[in-house]
Length: 170
Image (cartoon, rainbow, N blue to C red; front, side, top):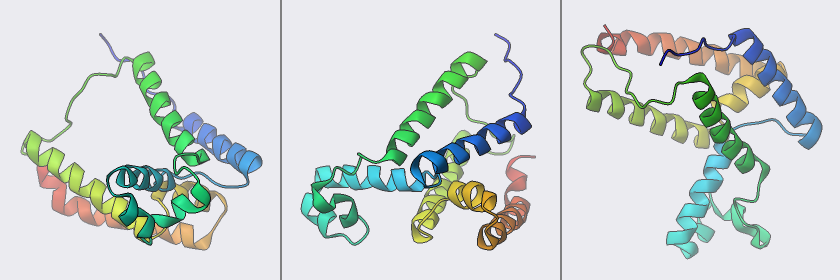
């Protein structure tokens, strides 16, 4: 089966900008994924250790006023994003499972590096009290100086890190 062409990135960028605008118009807030992931983590932890979770400084706020941590609009956004990605993959004929890697990197190394990078990004997002999508897309769109400094630092860090990991891809 032949893959369909990718969507035009400029049109997708405009569509994402319209989604952010719509989020501001409907909710008065920007979008971001780390808040939903924090709520999912709090909910899962609460299933195993409710007392510890409700006493934890990072998670207790999700349980105030006996509110359910998953009853939050960003959680629905995250679920919709996953469903939208699945539908897009099906429509584009790109639903096969594969591990993209260079000739020198084994499957285990590639998955390990991806896992470690994801953990670092997730911990960094919680420490910063926000995620890269919230900073870059929402903050950049609002012309926040801090968001633009963040974006420049991300690109500079990415280029610097590429020097260390490039041998895995060549």
